[in-house]
Image (cartoon, rainbow over all chains, first blue to last red; front, side, top):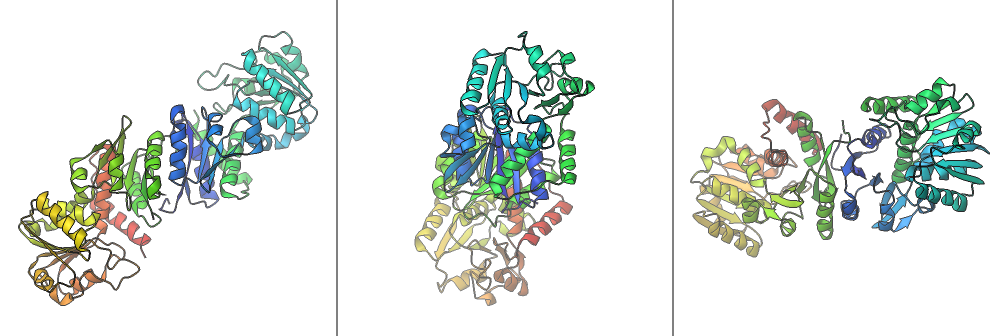
Length: 290
Length: 290
């Protein structure tokens, strides 16, 4: 029950009306006995500064950020975690002594979400579609998992080159290649890679017949195919991959674990999600998806 | 269930941790099918401007204000209702087209709370203790009820004089007197008056043996005694008055109705509180009180 001691948490984004974070975090609050409320607030880019100053004046207990605020927020923060600084983005804010501290939990969420596939990553070759903020966090996570070869696939050469340079210079991934989606060498890279990751919006509701890769015949039993999309839960990319015997993983698990990581930062508490809770929250989130 | 479409409402105050408004409004939301969340936020006086600008940037659906912000807020608003302007205070904000509109619902809440006693007020003599913001709203309501004689009782002569002048000049109450609590004429005023109202904090938890008037022998069957305090629900003032046959009323009903009036402003909807709901919310609020 919400009372006058309930602390307020929020996610800022624009658009925001499809965010699953309120369901997720309010579920956590009820399970972990946090007297809190988590809401989704539409904040336009030009109002981000006012919103953050206001949230501090109103004594918010924690803030999440999503598109389009993850990069812009950094210039408004007094302290950035080393990871947020390196990735150049933050999704979690903490107010402490009237200062804003920025963190990012996307890479942590990804790392937890592949916990049963860790052996696949060390020394492996990964093909990653996308070069946005999500892709950048994934690259950070991949470097921590010991990935040695990374093929980036991106339509826009400039953004792709930026991410490739970041991976080479800051993440120390041994071999980083950049290909356009229609490059003839992509087929061979996909075939040879052990892990395929989609960090683009290709295949996301409502354009569900799209996929980052249309040559599904290149996918086989030896692949682990990860799609960051969770709406639909089974994208065409994952559906076709599963049909061909690949191990698959959608983005829901990463969403849940990046949220849990944010809660742990806000509450300085190491909450454990047991199996029953995990299935309960997956069911709750899935019910909200089309 | 709170989801990403849930709208956020809040009350700003300092202190705020004993506010009953979250219980009240969240109860209303559940009963009237408003997809909203109402929280209490501690906002210090020097941060009010930032908090309000932030709430607008975050697209809050509505704001309530309590001590110490009710007067200060007016200078930050683009539009004031005639009543808010006259009383010089607001407890309810609406954001519309990036402008702040200020309203006050305290007088409306008081008026509804005396609906079964209306006949007592017209042409009557009222003794009112207090000269703060609450007393000012009560004076406004009393003038609308046709009260002709008002005796104000206040310790601080200056504040009392200000309120007396306001009543004379702006509210057109025929006869307005100001007495200190120990003035010898007060006994006669109390005896002759039909209505006694406490708008001070005398008798509020935790100093529950206090009362604005200690000469309880002056109270009789002909009196209607109203105490704006609701914690405890039965103050010493009300207890002693009831013992002597007076009709009594505590502040809970006014609290409920000023809240309902705020909700009606935010939602442009004329919600009706039926008897079952009224008793349910009184029970809910009472359970929170000591």
